[in-house]
Image 1 (spheres, rainbow, N blue to C red):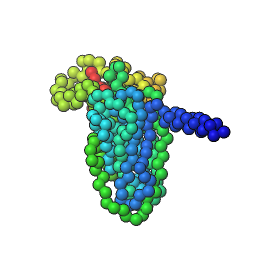
Image 2 (image 1 turned 90 degrees about the vertical axis):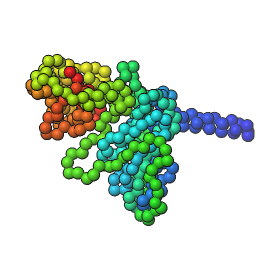
Image 3 (image 1 turned 135 degrees about the vertical axis):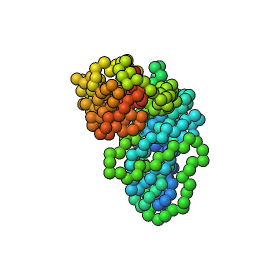
Image 4 (image 1 turned 180 degrees about the horizontal axis):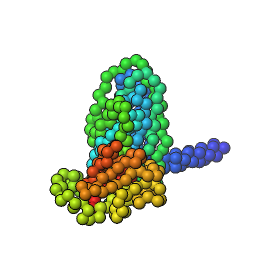
Length: 323
């Protein structure tokens, strides 16, 4: 009888172990915290973890938090060669991105994110989205397929009593500042900015080329902009790797199939942006969907387009303007 019981228990433990492995997944990302009870003014350290059989060249994550209870300070990755890419932050959401010029193997902690507790409350830290990045055969940024982002929700209990002052600076690794933006009455700049494309662009030839273009002073004749056909080279999004020649101007870009350039992306609106041309050059206009040139939001006035400028529509559709 004892042998039968031992055999049954062995089966149960084996089955439980298999379930645990399958629940985590072969390639996945999740959040953990060493403790969930804090006092006011103490440092909360949350780890972003991942398992991947495929070497990666970057990763991104977005963590939601309550600004009345927590203030993000910084993130750090101890993975060799992973460098932080500073992005504009949104209040209530941490946007973290890291990139490496060489593939790195990950099996554990990707990054540690530090918050300061502000006052007594019960609050949550939520992993809103995350991705592992690789460079595809064409050399462009691409999310690693088959990666599951576990629905991590960490509940924190913060006491009103003031705790011991702690240092928020990590001992080592690539530190990424996460200062939230100051209060503003205008429209905030989205924190995705470059997203996965920037992870590779910052380390690859495309982004380097765009920097060289921006540094070069262009003194072309007044009507030289019309001597060639301008082109949008798609670096990230549904049409990554493709190029669109601006044969017809003005050129309307959006999700509507009737547009001159149709981008089937959930973050792109029906008529998202418009490119026009004059004798003085090319200009990009925002039609209400959120349009950015080199990370700067296009507001009421059109933005001048120069060769090498990085154009982002919505959260992740990324182009490089060329002629």
